[in-house]
Image (tube, rainbow, N blue to C red; front, top):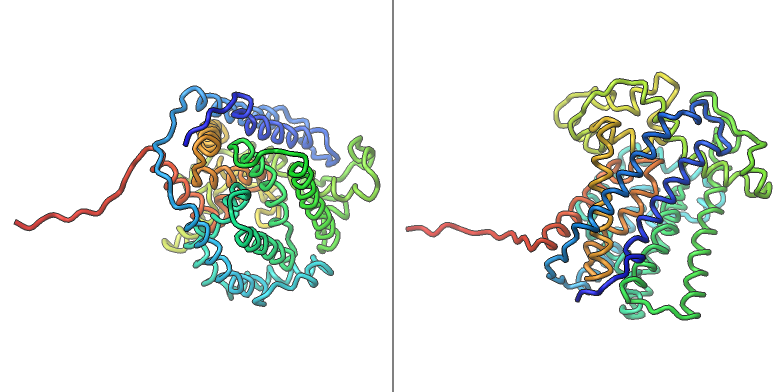
Length: 434
């Protein structure tokens, strides 16, 4: 089934992503953190160049777009299998990350800083390594249920809705017990986009009741994220957010900044924390631009793959050649601060090569979005959901390459989508004996 879509609808993701990325640049330049390189025209030039390349790829894909070869899979079976596997592995995941088969939500809410420290120590002990490797292998199947549940919300049964929501709540509870706000933040960003995608695809017809309910859900998720984000920042030992001091570059918060003056005192921790989270990567870019390019030939973009390669080969100094590692002499700590996606990409491509990546990413963004809303392809749908996370964290960290589960999930789903849309089939054949 193919639907005709208006140009305005096709351009929605481009407008959203470009507006958000521009906001991060403006927040770096004019926000409350007094980075000493915030006025750097070099940082501004490269940041805007990458945004322009992303937009160029998106518009190029619009001009070149061809409908996919339609071979619809069994959505119901995949959805059911994903739910089942998630529920089976959840207790093991909780055990591997917190030491308990069911997450200690109350402990995470009472003292998120202590919960974060405990979880970090427990995970670094390697006690749950086997479970994490199983999750890597199952990653694509584990991810499927969430985009499908939101996108097909009006088409799935009430029982499926219940179990989907239960699983979402359990995942948020697990991350709360770990003292981190990532799961809540991810849902707060992706749920609105997926609901909008379902509307664009004609799966949700808007009326007053649905608009009100959708608005309540979005506000509730945003409120949960902001509340827990503030709590985690307040409770972590040595938090730069509470002290208003960021050690790299001897950076401090300008209490008189116009943005801080525009929000109530109770909301200033949230503004300071979020602005630090999404802008410190630009400060790191300024540090990295001082360094020469040392190519890592595909390993620099993914810390996970780099670690696996070092383990298999016994070579132990490759990670020290990445940009996040080489700027540690300026006071940066690659294991503690967020280096942005740009520094990891530059470790393979150089800062001048990143526009090529952004051009290709823009093309994929457009194609997956259009495939989703016009043909309701579930593999394109999953990529839309993953791309929201990738771009939303672009100025902060490397969401795809930093963990094995995220990387494997993306690569497998991308492979299935690209081969299906072009009608590529893989068969095993045997040669007859004569």
